[in-house]
Amino acid sequence: MAFIKVPEGVPGIRSLVMFRPETGQYLYELAQILLRGESPISEADRELIAAYVSSRNNCMFCMNSHAAAARCLFGDRKTLVDEVLVDMDHSSVSEKMKALLHIAGKVQILGKEVKEDDIKRARDLGANNREIHDTVLIAATFSMFNRYVDGLGSWTPTDPAAYEEMGKRMAQKGYVLPQAIK
Amino acid sequence: MAFIKVPEGVPGIRSLVMFRPETGQYLYELAQILLRGESPISEADRELIAAYVSSRNNCMFCMNSHAAAARCLFGDRKTLVDEVLVDMDHSSVSEKMKALLHIAGKVQILGKEVKEDDIKRARDLGANNREIHDTVLIAATFSMFNRYVDGLGSWTPTDPAAYEEMGKRMAQKGYVLPQAIK
Image 1 (tube, rainbow over the protein chains, first blue to last red):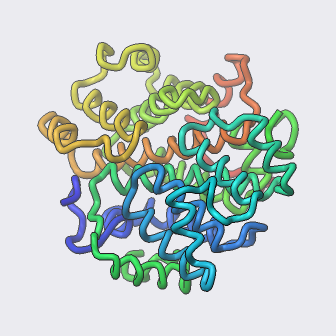
Image 2: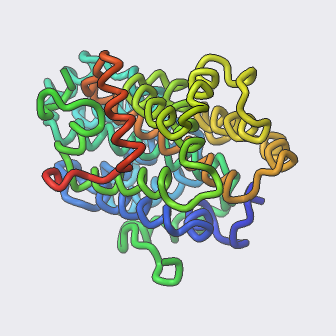
């Protein structure tokens, strides 16, 4: 049971947004522009960064839901998601994507952990300003979402089918606050 | 120098928002509703939570600017800010505020660090659902801002006068994106 009085049977961040839609609307809008807005990083790769950071933060709700969204978006290449979550360095994502995920992993620890060398490695593999920016902001944003979801003890479903359903919705419809919550 | 090409001479998050206003506008709007919107926690105490979390995340830009804003808002009681930043447990803030700052400190580490006992202690001292919610979300949000600002190596002024000026603006005008950036 969550630490504060939220609607029963509503999982994760959705229950918190229903408790306080005034802040929730900006959280959803930020997720939408960041994960579905224009970016040189594909939507699938952005969801992968979100799932990777959530996994490192041990946030099961965000990890499972964004991994499910990434699997939908990768389609035939969906096994990449579990490869990265199990062992990113030996996964079959591109070297550039590994360098970006490495930066995301540093951001997950702390902003100051990102060093010139981490950025240089990504640039040498072809990453541009926007890719570096978006990687850092996605990693920072999920360091927030993970703490919000777990810090208030919100409900984390354990049924994999629930996440598959969520992933489909997130991949198809993005992060749009249900009208009923606004 | 920042890790990406941002306007020179613009400090901290402002330079990053100028690089990417499409995400920046939601970051500012979130800060505004969270730190200046309606809440049972005073604006001064909310800025104190932000400065406390930023201090624990070793983010000098956010710590100095939000500490300066908190000092403005506390007025005659401004020494509270440095008391909390030096040794929160022995500061002269109320016992309820100590319990909320303790929760914020747990969120700074990781969401899962917040335990039933931390919440019970705050409730026993009079904290309600909204106070607990707002504390967790402010701590989570600054865990994001701190990582964004430092993870991209944005410029951190060292002159205390610069922060005093920023703090005044933040206390008086809040977090409104300059028209020129939008």
